[in-house]
Image 1 (cartoon, rainbow, N blue to C red):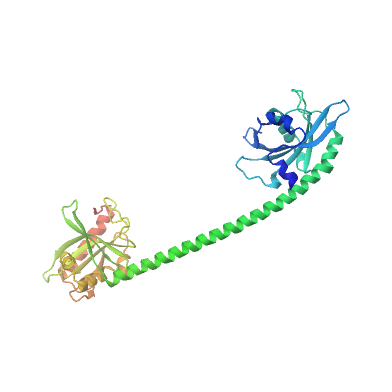
Image 2: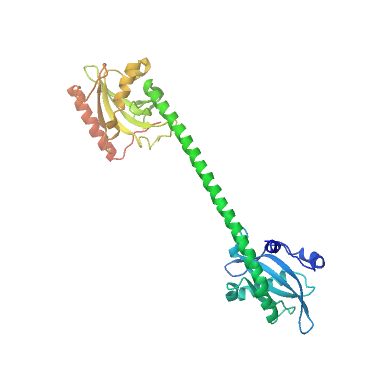
Length: 367
């Protein structure tokens, strides 16, 4: 591991002090654009071997090892994605960006060997501006293949094991974090559902009708709006555009309006030209004016009236249908047939008029 660590981010060797000032101009990782598609090749580190090489013509060089990775600078570097290349430089030569660009060129040209060996020897960097490399030394190449490649192989193996352990630890921690997050979410959901169910039960046990401001439609009529309780579910029962159409000789009133169930009283609703969207148009008869019933706030009468409006089938009408939901008498009984002939005829006409109005695309406005 010590060898591999030395290769990440610093240069070691006998010439450390001599070249320190020059190397400050080159920081690692050092990235180069290596294709027209803006692919990146990064030199992660350069390590100077502590040896001197003397050639037949008297030249002296130093052997350097560079670790290279392809990809974006923000990507994490894994051991299996790092290539190692060996190259010589003339003794006393400082490591510059121009020199490393020649190294990158040699690395990219040697694509076959790069994937077959732990460390690939690419030759001696030439001092000639027209050439990148001198002819390779067989002696140096053998040294790289037999000695340095073996060291790198062992170091990479150790690092792979360490990184795999770190990755497994991360996955375990992430799984535990996700499990805790899910458990916390489910607990919050459970608490919220219990609270909501308690609120629904409280509404059903003590039902009320809340006045909303009345409004005058484009036809000049005054409409009433209320919030009550759905006695089947305990949710909010919206009563909108309630209109007292007529009264028969027996003192029974005919009403039309829209109803809708929603979990919370602060839930949004459509108004204006979109009024009635998601709501059920209904008509019903009752032995008392609804405005008087709401104002007197008799608990029994309130509950009976909300029972009439909360029947499950009230919300199952077809498009273009105004459903007749029944007649409520003063005793709280709900009937579908307890109406005078005049009211039955009026109910039929209202339903036909609503169907025709729906087909024409006319909408009753809410405010």
